Image (cartoon, rainbow, N blue to C red; front, side, top):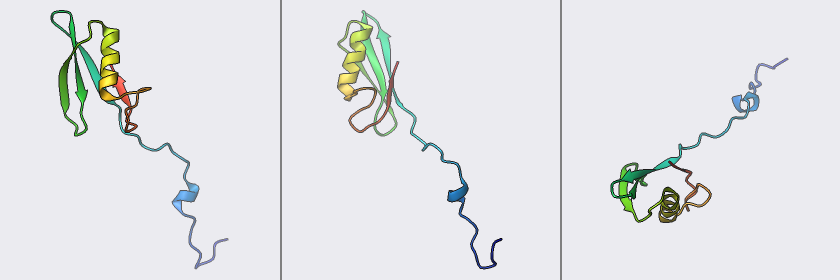
Length: 86
């Protein structure tokens, strides 16, 4: 039985653990352009989109080029941000 001056248990003690809220991944979208070339549209650090033309001539090379340009290794950049390349 709880005494009058006792504080009830805090919500933290009773709550189920939850996964921390994570930021959604940034996206880089490879674009098929004219003349058998590729481009990319990607998020920048301030939330707007950038586009650029790639030198790659195949989709696979385009993926490698954009990963190299953005510094992505194992789907994360140097800051630890998760990237999705489509």
